[in-house]
Amino acid sequence: MASHTDLTLRARLNGPWHRPALRIFSAIVLAHLAEHIVQAWQVYVLGYPLMEARGILGQWFPWLVHSEVMHFGYALIMLAGLWLFLPGFVGRARKWWLAALVIEWDDGPHAKLGTKDILDELEQATLKPGAVAQNIGNVDQAMAGGGETYEL
Figure 1: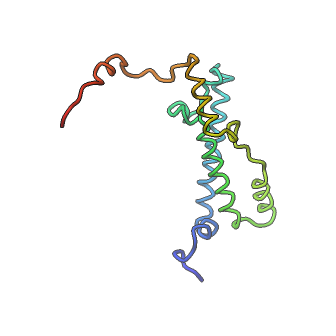
Figure 2: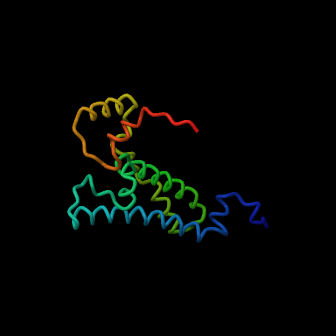
Figure 3: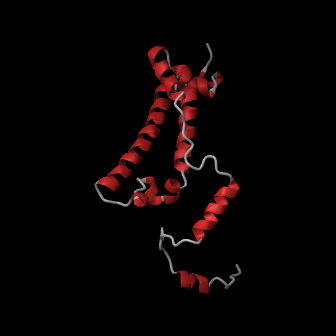
């Protein structure tokens, strides 16, 4: 019989590490669901405008929500987890696990956009008035001191 050190990562995840690894994977799935529940609470209970309902992580990192980075990263983690943990399931559990792999995955509204399309869209956005996401610091003071050079 092979020792723990002889096993591949996938074999360990479906062998001796199966239970703790699945708990971590489940925590990631539940955290993503919790983000959406918080967003719904922010909109329907607290009355936030849709663009301001950013969940928990989005309050500190707004770019995660508006750029779809979080959803794309989550989708990659899901696909990797579904594939990595597949050998650890048998019978009916394996059928349901495989069903999750054949779901049609949506890459989002910007999946088919090229770099030029995105740059054109961003350039057009610069011509429109926007909302201030964060107002920290003194711009005038920073600009006035921008020409100064400090030698160490």
